[in-house]
Length: 509
Image 1 (spheres, one colour):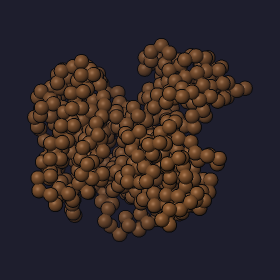
Image 2 (image 1 turned 120 degrees about the vertical axis):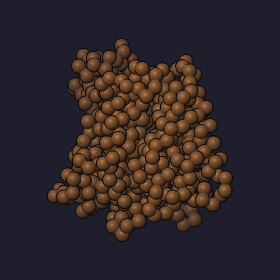
Image 3 (image 1 turned 135 degrees about the vertical axis):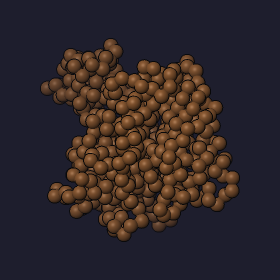
Image 4 (image 1 turned 30 degrees about the vertical axis):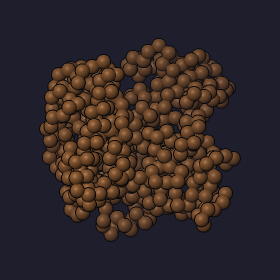
């Protein structure tokens, strides 16, 4: 028996049918074409909450009662459709790109009292959360564009310019700190709170040192020494007291990888691989001796520098698919601004599936060519060119190779994936598997900006600070870039399919 389902999303209403008795998440996914369950539908994170506008659903489960959802709100992974239903869905990926799923931590031992802040300085955006340090309650969260992008979308370009242009580091640092100060003032205004009494900073291996005026030039060549090998304690205009700037793991693995790993461990994820997907992708194996590595994916993985690309922050589509008869984009109308990295993943997986692009990345059924370059017409004014596909393949190969090399060096076969970061939060995981962006390692959870969550945990929890210290003390870097092994495997991972033969069942660490 079928039940009618209406979904309000992005200012539009979508209608369809679902099997009566199906989970609400399945019904919504059937109507929209996708729906993210960050904790895999276990009812732990609360991120799949939807507002029920009418209809008949099963009674709230214990998981929903534990989270204390307000009247009219349900967890889509827990509620079952018993009759016709109408719900309103907010963009889960947008929420998780700023702040991720927070783990439960017993007790609060904050670094300061009153209002405090945690800040994540990423390569393309700066995210922050304002916290009541005494209770651990979040007061406000938001983001600002990192102005460093004006000097280069990728961090290597920024290093090169700093090495060439005298005085540029100071200007970049000042611009970044103005953006941080403006973001914290805005969040303080939203929360009706005063200036933070203290702050904790985490961030990208290059962007965070630049923010505090530390020369990243040692990362411009081997042995890739990070200028933030030790933490800093600094004062600033945006906070009343001091700020702790957390140290990098080493090389191109920044402090954001360490705080994301802390958050993942506090969630209980041991024996898996955490991947923070982005321009500089970082990965960590979280069991026994923790292993860390990084991959220079470049801007293409987020849609940057592609003819059809746009960042999710810039309003680009977060999902795009070809269904055999035409193209669909989510949110509706977002195709006018271009495709984000997560949209490119789902789009390319569907194009390969339907034979418009072959697994080698060659466009087979082009709508035309310009300057000798084939293209597919996705929407008015939006084309996917052969050059776009090739650039994305290079970024995909960098991430796949780094994750596989890390997994193969682990003490035991990894049991799953924790996907973090803005891009990791919006990915269609099955599509990512199909084009070989990640290996199938078991379970996969999308927990959002865990780097910022981990920084907040460090701010309020002694347990998190102890775990952070142990992690840094025992971490081992897996140098992926520059080796012959990396290059050979990168070549093998260029096709839009799983990388063959690089991680077998008979895993030996």
